[in-house]
Amino acid sequence: MNKLKYIAASLLVGFMTLTSCEDAEIPQVDTENGRAIAGFNGAVSNPKITFNPTEDVVNTITVGVSTVSSVDRAVVLNLNEDDTTLPSSYYEISTLNPVIPAGSFTTDITITAISSLDLPSTTDIIALDLVSVQDSEILSESEDRLNISFNIQCSTVETENIPGTYRIIEDGFDTSVGDDTFEIIAGPGANQYTMVNPFDHPNPADGGAQSYDVIIDIDATTGVSRIERQDAWYSDNFPFPVNYGDGRIDGSGLTLTCINQIQFLALRHTVDAGSFGSYTFIIEKQ
Image (cartoon, rainbow, N blue to C red; front, side, top):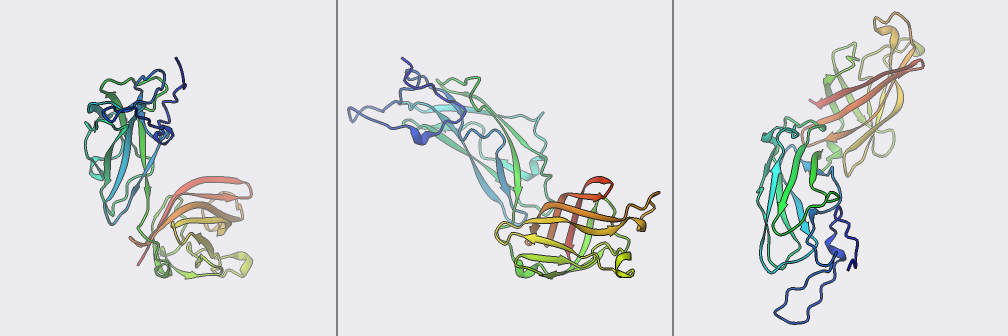
């Protein structure tokens, strides 16, 4: 008898209520008449784990089954090397053969993100497959593949260390017409910081003064950074065949005070006529 239509993709253990008639019994949840259905817990096929550039971070992945058993159940996982793009130097998996203990619904493995100042790409993944769980089924609806990517984050955001002299260490648009160094000062508002003419462009609307300052909003808790669309350069300072006027930038990034960097991996450059696309922009405090 189908008492519940089991949603294998979620495997949320918290909804299961256990009852026992005898002390010697191990209770069983009657999900599709006691069928043991396995999957990764959480119903998120593309989870993110945390990478800290300055310290190792231990992250947990859970495998679950819809019933409990009186015996241990072996789990077999597989690191799909064809689909995994993150180099192995960035992570360590505790085991690919965990065990769900008798009387339990779940077991955990850990993925340790190994610290490095050479940051991983945010597009790289670890592809982890659930191959089997002893005496259990993996349905077509089960969450049996995780494509795990990284959130890069420092332990804290030291906002007092943000102001100072910075150097552009990567700029896919090659925006600067100067020496690639500039100042960041606090303000004008709370949690705002101003890049003082970061690209050294003369502003014809200001008599040729280098006045293309750019304001960054930085979340003091997470380091998430945002540049709202604003003037940042002037097209006639480039060898464009047409003068497009003021160039503008906008995009989201991350302030990593633990390595003295602010990163925008997709900073968009636009003019009134349209967009030039999005480019990596990384600066480092000197």
